[in-house]
Length: 316
Image (cartoon, rainbow, N blue to C red; front, side):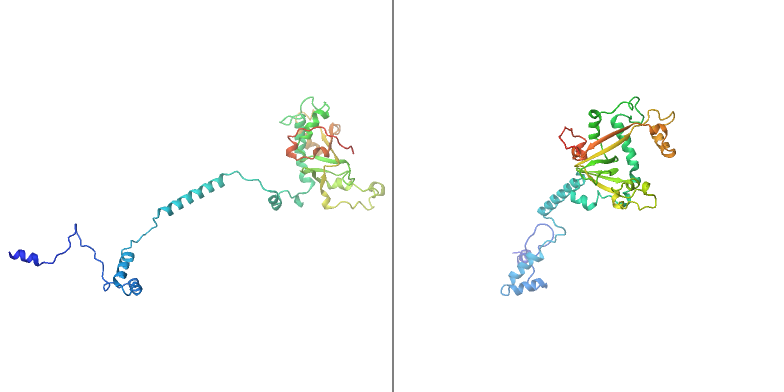
C-alpha cells in the first residue's frame, strides 16, 4: 500500500454535502446560554437532550414573521371593509327619511314665535294670496294682467265653489260669521296655519280693539274719556279656531278693468295705499264666499286633490 493510500485511510471521514457551506449542527446543552433554555432544563431535569431539542425546534429555528400573513384573517378584513364601504355608500346616497312627529315637536318646526306674530308681517302674504286666488278664479292672467270682460261676470257656486274648496288658504283673511261657540263670532285675521280641523289666524290689533263684549262701554256713545274694552290681550293676536261648527266669510276684492294707461294692477294698489282709495277703488266689485268648516275637515294637501261631494250639514 502506498503512502498516499495510507494517509487517506487514516483521515477522519466527514459528511459530504452538495453545494457550498457546511451543515448546521444542533448545539449541545453546554454551548447554549439562553434564559428560555434554562427554563426548559428546569422543566426537563432528567432529559437535557429533550430540552435542547425543544429549544432548537421551537425557539432557535422559529421563523420571524414581520407581518401577519394569515389568509383567513386577510379575507375577513377584506370582506368587512367591502361591507362597510357598501353601508357607507348606501347611507350617503339614500333618500332622506321624513321627520317623525316627535322630532318635529322637539325641533319646534311649527311653533310661531312671538316676535313674528304681528299682523303687519303677514300683510304681504295676504297680497300674494289675493293675486293667487284671482288667477285661480280666472280674473288675472299669469303675468298679472286683468282678463278683459271677466270682472263683469258673476261668480257662481258651481264654478267657483270647487276652486275655492281646493285652493290654498294660507294668507287668506277670514272672519267667523256664525258658530256654535259665540266666542268665535267676529274673529277676523290672516290664516298662517291650517291643519285638519283648525285655522290659526293672526288678528289685527286695531280691529280687535273694536270688538267689544255686549254691554261694554262704547267710545262713540260714552265719550273718549270712558273706560275702553280691556278684553284685548297680547295672546289674543294669535288664535286657533276650530273648523267644526263655524262658518267663515272670505271677501275678495276684484281688480278694476281699467287701472290706468300706464298702470298695472300692482302699481294701482300701491298708489291707492299712498293716496288713499279713489272713487273707482271704492266702487270695485267684491266676491264674498262663506266656507262651512264642517265640509273642510281634511288636511290641506288632501283637500287640494280631493273631489268634494255634497254632505248633509246643520245650518247654523
